[in-house]
Length: 353
Image 1 (spheres, one colour):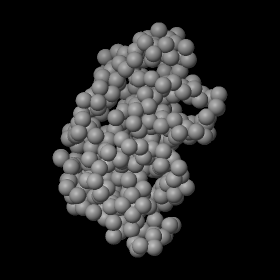
Image 2 (tube, helix red, strand yellow; image 1 turned 60 degrees about the horizontal axis):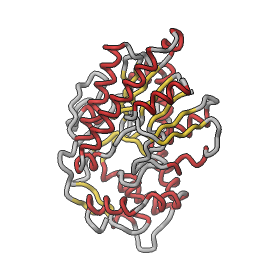
Image 3 (cartoon, rainbow, N blue to C red; image 1 turned 180 degrees about the vertical axis):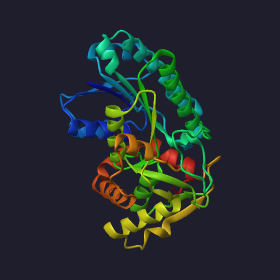
Image 4 (cartoon, one colour; image 1 turned 90 degrees about the vertical axis):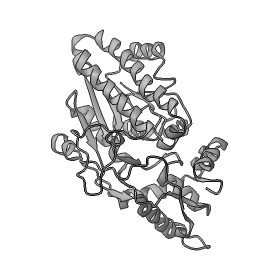
């Protein structure tokens, strides 16, 4: 058995679904079900005896210790995190509480469990920290992509909280010997992405003729990674990664935000034409967010060279799959668009968003 934290969120739920589909090994899934955690993401495995869901917080030491003792997982994969930069700017405390303090408590619970295991189980045990390229800071337009040796220079409260968590994970390995692995991924996209992030927000707004808010000039560049490729990379690192090491996971797909919005519009125009005209008419530039990093780019050569992983999706193929998924799952979109969601979007982008 493996223990997955945050397994009802976007990346975590995709990972759990893929794991159950590809493996006979059970998953213990711990999630606090905060605003972006959604059990509907896991509806396809509802009732599956190989999926055990527990509603709880990684900072609950007694709960985590009990789960570890009862289920004796061979690995813990930490997806649990507050993950939206905009929300971290508006309220950083929640990000420190979950991403830093929560990771600390989880590490301590796991360390106590690991130290008490028989020698063979202790040697085989792994703790995998799922992290982000945002810990590295921002790149100049012509700078080389982030490698695993790039120093940490986080610029947002979210990035700083994830950087702190990564440092804790590294320290628990070097100080206590805990067998850890870390992955730093680029921007994910795909099914079950909460519609406050760029791609799903553009899709759901465009479908109902609402403005498509683009920060500043829209020339901020990100590397984009289809979530299914990311999940496969995490499985690869868990299976073959060297303890104490980190692995950058990217899609080799650098794209400017405005170009992504235009591609989403073009796909929707093709797949579900709007009688009112091309969706690009809805693009609306809004004030840029504070401290907005201009460019991220991941050099994913290490994971390819050492572990044999490469992304399978191009941005074009992955984006088409993503748009089609949202078209096919309008009921999921309606359910997650609660009053709190609408208030948040209005606060960030103005009442017309």
